Each structure stands twice: as C-alpha cells, then as structure tokens.
Image (cartoon, rainbow, N blue to C red):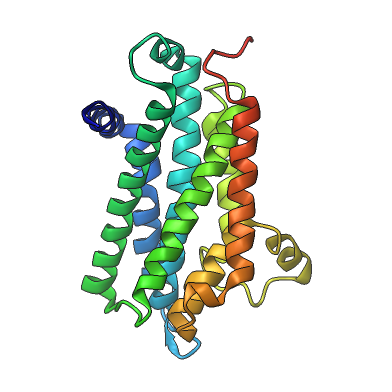
Length: 248
C-alpha cells in the first residue's frame, strides 16, 4: 500500500508541475463554468440557468478529466518511453495504472469541488435534495469515462496527436450532449446523434437528480448505457494497450 500511495503522490506532483496539462484538464472546465454562467442569465424549467450549468459543467469535467486527461497522460508517457521503463521497476503494472487512475480522479474531485464552491459563492447554487445520487452519478461517470480513456490511449498512435484527438471528441460531444446548455431546440438530426453519446446519459442523470429529484437507481437505462461505454473502452484497452512506444 505504501508503494501505491507513493506512486499516486508522484503522479500528482508530475501533473501539477505540467502547466499545460493542469490548465487544460483542471482549469478549463472551471473557466468555462464562470464564462457560461455569466453569459447565460435567465431560467430553465423555472430555475436559474446556473442550476443547470453547475451540474452539466461538472459532467463535462468528468469527460475532460477522466477521459481526455487520462488518455493524454498515458499516450505521452508511452511515447516518451516512460511506460516501458515502468515495466522494469518493482512496481506492478496494474498498480501503476490504478495509481494513474486514482490520481486523475483526485484532480476531478478538486475540480468538481471548485465549481460547486464558485456556484455557491457567486450564483447562489444549492445542492439538490438527492445529493448522494448526484455524487454517485459523477462517480459512475468518472469510472466509465476512465475506462474509455484507457481505451482511447490504446488506439491513439502518437503523443503529438493526443490532444487533438481528445479535443475533437470531447468538445463536440459536450455541445451535443447538453454540457454547455439545454439541447431542446437542437435540430432532430443533432438530437439523434446525441442519443448515442455517453455524456448525454450522464447529463440526463444529473439533470434528473437536480430538476426532478429522481435518484440514480430510478434511471437504469442511462446507467446501463454509461456502463456499456465504460466496459467497451476497458475491453479495448485489455486487447490493444501497449507499454511500448508505437513505431512511426
């Protein structure tokens, strides 16, 4: 256990010392939250828009951090030969990956806490009555998107293209899924695309908790879809994950 804790601490130090990753993975969702909450005044379903944006931007943070952040970190370390060298150390490979996952989850928890505190201080946001379900939804989303992050890291071939691939996936998905605002006025073709995206179901779960007081266990379809996406990413990682740099 001391070896695992040491590796988590090392991952945290490396993450926060890399200013680019800290800005993109941790700070970007927070800045978007402040920007959108300032721009989108008014109400949605009889409540301030910030009630929607607080939970939806945390959902975006789930995808950005545990999917995008994890994928970028693992691809970069693989291409720099770090993962290859890890295999020659006494640290077991599964423990290394578990430490990387716990480290990125810690970043997400800090990010989500920051958004909630800002929402409370500046926009009079309150936790919903079903707050345990809200936290359970974010945890489920984080684990499922982490599985997808491992899968994406297995498929992305170069460190130089990792950020581009992640951004091309995450930003359109967030827009279509309602992470940046309600999608009720979107054209039917865009809504049809959104219906197959995992983030749509995470946003649906958290908005169900916030607006309708519907606990997570009463939304089994959305939970199942999220779980299926996470499982698919994990199976891809089991099949294709490599510790060696890819041949150019």
